[in-house]
Length: 240
Image (cartoon, rainbow, N blue to C red):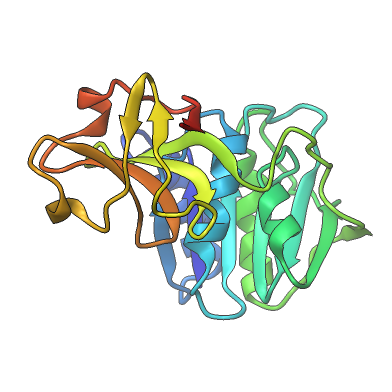
């Protein structure tokens, strides 16, 4: 199985072009669209989503992960094998938290290059073919390295909004169990108490809770936190 985690979106051609390469090279392998709307040009935010949403997939799953504002520049291309899962993508902080939290991790710098490599679409031209190789049990030309480039600005838990979903709920890069239920969070000038689920609050009330993938999330019962609270990706939160 290959799982796509990108900021390409579904509106234009980019996700389709990547999937076309995979269809040509591994036509019998399922391709799952997990994220096509990771925060655009924001590998730091995406780094806190990957560990939460990639767990639970079967061993050997290949995650093709691309949030790559430095495409065509000096950043390296990586393969990471973390806790029986494969990850392919740019060395720009995207795999910092996956690698840090893994009980067993190995990393390689990808040296293989296709005959034709565009300057601006390595997701299609480089990372997709490498993902196809890995799912077939083949390792492309690559150099073993100790770890992805270290990112000192990435704390273990990030007190910032890292994703806003279809319902307007805002995920924070904080793992479940990090905050006791009694904590009051302050976000964008609003103070939020904890609830177990939406129906514990009155319609229109904002709160924080632990979502189904064990991340702290801000929500509004029968409403959208982006509208009620005016929050956006990158907004900081703090404990009152």
